[in-house]
Image (cartoon, rainbow, N blue to C red; front, top):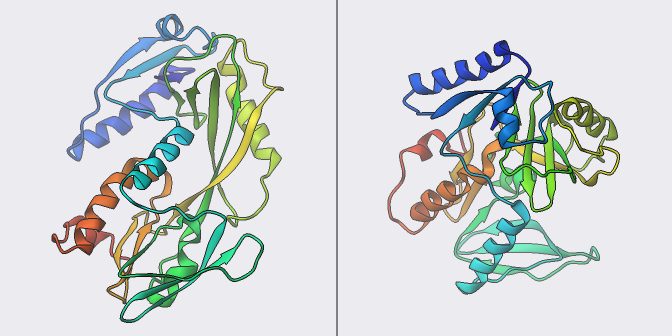
Amino acid sequence: MAGFTSEAERGVLEHEFAEIEKRGGQVDFARISGDELRQIEPSISGSVTHGMRIADQRYINPPLYVASLAEAVQARGGEIVSDAAVTGIRADDSVVIETQGADGRPGADFTADHVVIATGTWLGKLARPFGVRQLVQAGRGYSFSVRPEVVPTHPIYFPTQRVACTPLGDRLRVGGMMEFRPADAPADPRRIRTLVDAAGPLFDGVDWGTREDEWVGSRPCTPDGLPLVGSTRSPRVHVAGGHGMWGVTLGPLTGRILADHIVGRGEHPLMRAFDPLR
């Protein structure tokens, strides 16, 4: 669902959809009134006068997704090493991955035939020694959750306010913002306040003062907006990152084309555009 406070606001998103269709994509949507939107999602306030229902969309619960992904890795014989940070990579006849424990002391070294650096905003530090010069910068997004009197049953996007709301069980996750600051900088409470001010008029029955799970996360952004997927100067060291706001969406495809490349099943044509050494 998408909500708007005027017909002009809705027209902006329709223009974006028209541009997508010009480039070969398809978006199946229907215009609905604010009242029709409230019949579907009663928590939407009366200030939302226009709506849109967008078909063929999906959303996920991120914590459950990550947990199930870890279970799938382990079920296939993979090992997950937690409470350790990778501090360096050496590549010659094989790859040596150096780690540091949570206590700051040197950890175990791991040897592999190939390694994929997929460390998000922190990708550059490990990949730079292997010729990757593209900047990967933190585009930080903020979120929190609230417990509306009536929890929406659909994700709801407010394009003008740049606020995305996702139901997670008995809570509603409210997210937005694009803040360019160092990935490890502390969260700025003003950003949460901005989100509350933007989302507050759009909902009824929400106590915005009882927020939970306030969080900031770093989207890995590149200067040209394209991911970094492929081999580095070392044929044993590969990178997968720089997806910006599309990591969850593009992650499965990235994994497939990079895995095929590593094991010799051929190179997907997309990888030429995503060359980490560009």
